[in-house]
Structures are given as structure tokens and as C-alpha cells.
Image 1 (cartoon, rainbow, N blue to C red):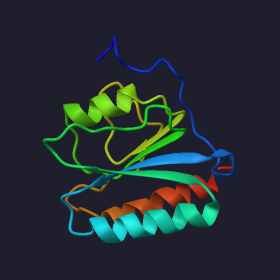
Image 2 (image 1 turned 90 degrees about the vertical axis):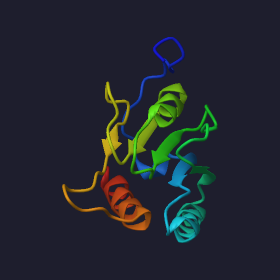
Image 3 (image 1 turned 120 degrees about the vertical axis):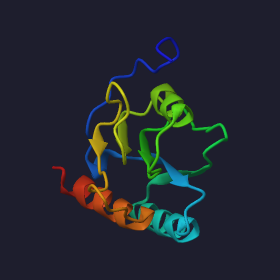
Length: 133
């Protein structure tokens, strides 16, 4: 993975500077369709181009490598997710669980013993993102 990873430096970005986002959704979650609708509605309202990728645990993840922001709502981690995140040339990476060597710039994780839906985590991520000035 070290040889194939992106060399693009990453950092936090303000919402006003974002023009394209790729969102990874957990395809096995009960709320996947509702979460997809919420994500599409949110970014359409902001005029931001969106690519939605539904992630399955044992399938390869195809992510547009040149996206500006990579946002993962996938609650689990594995080598496929780690490979896709590291390979992405996104300038800003957001996730639910930090991976080894910390490729995510912003992490919104579930507290110990609790599990929140993709919709709730997405809402919290967007609150934080909109508060960046």
C-alpha cells in the first residue's frame, strides 16, 4: 500500500471551497437508501458535485481518485477501505474510524458501546464542516 498511496497532501477545507465530494456508504446498512437521499439532497442544495459509492464488505471499492473530498460513512475498516482511502487523491478526507497512519483529516466516531446510523453521523460531520471558518 505504501507504494500505491497518493502523495497529495491533505488538510481541512471550508464548505465554500468544496466543489466535488465522493461519499462511501455502507451498502449493508438498513438506512442506506435514506442516507443516500439525504446526502444527495444536502450536496445538491450546496451546488456541490457528488459521487456516491455503496460499499460492500467483500467487494473492491472503486473510488474516483481525483475527487476533492472523500467522505466515508462506512463504520467498519478493512484492507479494501484502507486501500481506497490511501489511493484517493482527495485533498480532504473524512471518516468514521481512523485507519493506521491516520489518513483521515476529520473523524467522527461512535462512542464506546453505541452505534449511530449513517444519517446521524453524516449530519454531525456536516455540522462540523460548516463550522470551519
